[in-house]
Image (cartoon, rainbow, N blue to C red):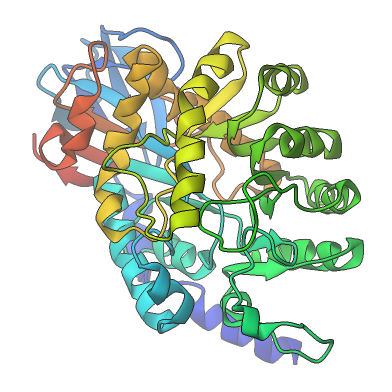
Amino acid sequence: MLGGTAAVMAMFAGFGLAPGEVRAQGAQPPVVLTNLRFFDGETLEIQAGRNILVQGNRIEALIPAGDIVEGATVIDCGGRTVIPGLIDAHWHATLCGVTEQAALMGDINFVQLVAGQQAGATLLRGFTTVRDVGGPAFGLKMAIDRGVIRGPRIFPSGAMLTQTGGHGDFRLLSALPRMPDTPADRFEKEGVALIADGDAMVLRKTREQLMKGASQVKIMAGGGVTSLYDPLDSVQFFEDEMRTAVKAAADWGTYVCAHVYTSEGIQRCLRAGVRSIEHGQLADEETVRMMADAGVWWSIQPFLNDEDANPKTEPSARAKQELVQAGTVTAFEMGRQYNVKMAFGTDILLNPAGTASQGRQLSKLTRFMSPLEALRMATGNAGELLAMSGERAPYPGRLGVIRPGAMADMLVVDGDPETGLDWLGDPASSLALIMKDGAVVRNQL
């Protein structure tokens, strides 16, 4: 049996990448980006006087602007600014580009095909990496990594873990009561979310996602906007249940992130050892101070009452959405006041028309901070957050920075990151070059 399994796995090992392409990758000449300014993803200034040397899929060195590299392919950036590839730390790769009806009741093959199309569009918006915080993204990640389709690097969470009736339980009320012999609901079968009540079930479902290749585990620790049954102020999962997920993830060298808005829910997460708070727009000042003291990450989104909000037609969902939006400004202000480690995400969800706003969402952060600080949240800061996956990180090098040894993910932009980020809203014209993994995806220079 083992021999047969190995043979089958070997047959698919190089799927999407022919042997000739593998040899070509190993023999590719170095690339030098010249005539540029650059933002390194960490230092809040634009630097000059250097060229960027790329060898394979890594940034080899930052060399003096006059140096010549023999045999290198030279890309003249025309005086433009180079920035690291952008990172969306709260993305749903398989759920962003379909409607709620399609996600819950449509053909899963359609959902996945749309996800593939959206992956290419995400990359062309300049997002070279995403942290997928819920959904069946393992196959999509494999297709991208093996060159079958184009898309960003994906740090997958797999299915979101939810308690019965929590944010992630999308069953109809007619499906209740759930009996021991009741089969899994469609959203569980497809890996969107999993219902887990009690320590034993939380342990099993956490380990299942790690077995499938999760780089981090996502739990639903409080009420949500999209879900129908749970009040926004509800606290979900007992502390012991959270601790079980945290321990199981830690045994695999990684961490748990948690969807949660309220102070009570956030504080429970902190006591249980959760390392990344997703959303958190209803946190009070005491809770924000606790987040800073604990050194956890705040993966926060610019949920504002504007045209880019995820569409909600159901009155209760709309009311919850407005409550979250009202807390967004205060959350950003307190996060900066207490120096909480903050990373940018969008959480564009079940909103096909909204996916195009991904870069524009980042530009909105200039309402709360300088343009370079906002850009750092989607580059160097987000890269640090991703690095918490440790050995479970799917990719070996640093992300979100222009430093020797980092992955060669870079953008050449027609725009000045020191004065504003509005150019992110029009990536087709503002991103003159997109490089991911040392390969040029788009070149309009």
